Image (cartoon, rainbow, N blue to C red; front, side, top):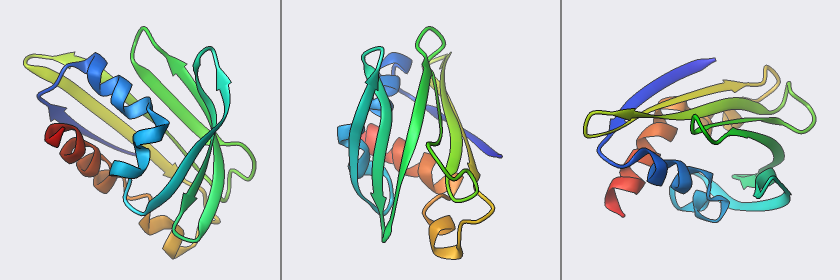
Length: 131
């Protein structure tokens, strides 16, 4: 798993809420054409379908709301999917965001370019700081 972190001068709870808002994912995830919640789990998106480039897949999410951690994994086909997590920790003057992503071994080069860990963090940070 490739893990990166970044400091964001924003409230951790506000960042957490922005990150888990499926309707806003296409605004910051590079190449994402569509994200749709298929099923809810304890009031949060539990299963989300994605259309990214020419690829479509579904991820299952789990949450630790007290710690502001979200985890995801492929519903089926772990070798073709992505797994990961995002954590939003209180830091002086803002939030320490830690983001991890592991790509399935069967993902091809085109699919892998959409899952660059640093690019995802950079895109999220740019988006939330512009808002």
